[in-house]
Amino acid sequence: MSAVPDTALITPPAANPVVQSVRDALVIAKRNLIRMTRIPEVVVFGLVQPIMFVVLFSYVFGGSINVPGAGLSPSGYREFLMAGIFAQTVTFATAGAGAGIADDMHKGLIDRFRSLPMARGAVLTGRTLADLVQTTLTLVVLAAVALLVGWRTHENLGEVLAGFGLLLLLGYAFSWIGALIGLSVRTPEAATSGGLIWLFPLTFISNAFVPSENMPTFLQTIADWNPFSATVQACRELFGNLPPGYPVPDAWPMQHAVWASVLWSLLIVVVFRTLAVRKYRSATG
Image 1 (tube, rainbow, N blue to C red):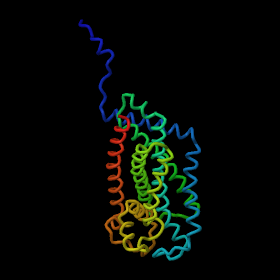
Image 2 (tube, rainbow, N blue to C red; image 1 turned 180 degrees about the vertical axis):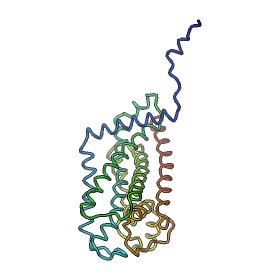
Image 3 (cartoon, rainbow, N blue to C red; image 1 turned 45 degrees about the vertical axis):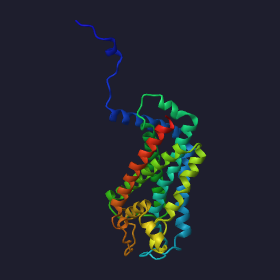
Image 4 (cartoon, rainbow, N blue to C red; image 1 turned 180 degrees about the horizontal axis):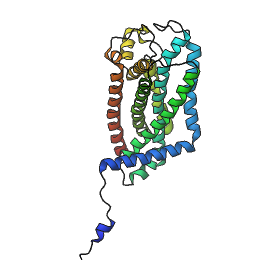
């Protein structure tokens, strides 16, 4: 009987690279989720802001903004508004994603991960997956609050779930933008500021809070082609929250909002994941 070489006893079988990457990403995601549970105030404060937006916009602006097809009806504006609030909430999670990664970089944790035999992109993928879980929790709570203030859907359950799926896809896409920002700055504070400053014009130059037809022509064009607007429009359609006779703009993303939302989100994921992984490799090289 021939002897078995010593190397065969100590060398583990080579794992499929894709399987290994998925396994590593899930481990990092679990680590970030455990960390979130140990800092509950982060989750609580993340819920307070969107709830305030729901209540304030519903009762302060309800009855003051004329929505075509609904007029000045507070309930009509409330249904028009909610898709915009949902979309704003998932995109504003970008700042938290960037701050978390910047904090890990600042504390040297990323260097420790780099010393382990793990896929390079797993650290970022795990972080964005954990953020997706937190965003899902936030959306569930926010939807419950919206129902309490009078928001209702008027389509079947499948379409409503598809609308929330588009919101989560948009939030996941934007978390990669946050990851790139977090890798590009030196402190978590800078990541938070950098993650928010560009979101305000993105969300307000859109159809989230007012119909884009009320804007000047050049801003209306920007709003109609805004990735954020496509998801908002798609959710209104899937939730059945478009008022009867509401004039849909002629721009392609508004006429085919569901497809535009999916395409925009996937494009953002592909572009910014590529840039973020490249930045991660150079930052830790």
